[in-house]
Image 1 (cartoon, rainbow, N blue to C red):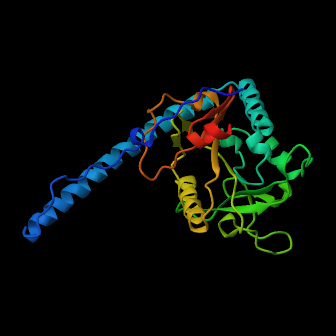
Image 2 (cartoon, rainbow, N blue to C red):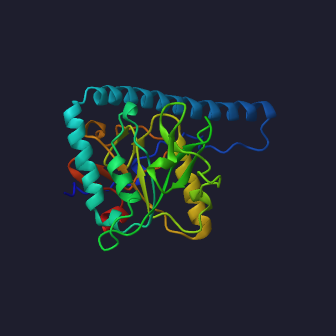
Image 3 (cartoon, rainbow, N blue to C red):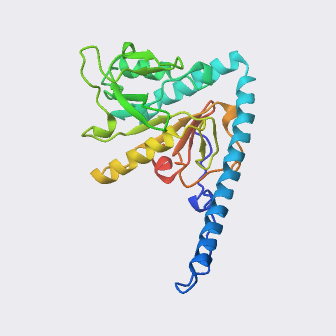
Length: 274
């Protein structure tokens, strides 16, 4: 089932810090220039602090809604979302993708069925053979890598009991990093805490996915590749009113949502493909 097609221009999405419109004369005394610079910096930081505060409020509200979601309804929504992905032509035709490994304690939409289907090497007559990359958190400074896995046994629990690949395989070889791969990714399957139908995505505050997506965009630009389709999976309570998710210029927008009711294409390229 395809959801309503909504497109929002990015000009209505980003919150950019204000800057002074009056140019600063080069003949001004140094002290004056310092005051102007401090004022601009201070104002920008004030606006960013306000946005971060709004994000914390939204996160708190959505976490409570997810915690209150009936377990049986959660299972129904997990099945509906994963089945929608598995039956979608844009998923069946993709050959290389990055996908998150769902964590139950974080109340993320389940991806176990999707990952298992990919790694089972599906019938090539009905689905293209796929190469899968999954997250490995490198440090606490928003640095994350996407490493290639071939089996679910390649995953081990980290210190937070979240499954991720070991940097080396059973033979002691380093896993392929998607940022060093010779071929482009077709699809990103993304998690998040809240979304809207204008493409805004609110993460959990670590900045890992936004940082990684920007790095991959730089890599794609360098190689002359098309950017992959960015698709997020969302329970019903995670979809908020358009414009209610505050964003900064560092936040990366998504192309489409998959919800229990179906696919919501957002950007023109998603509308064209979905």
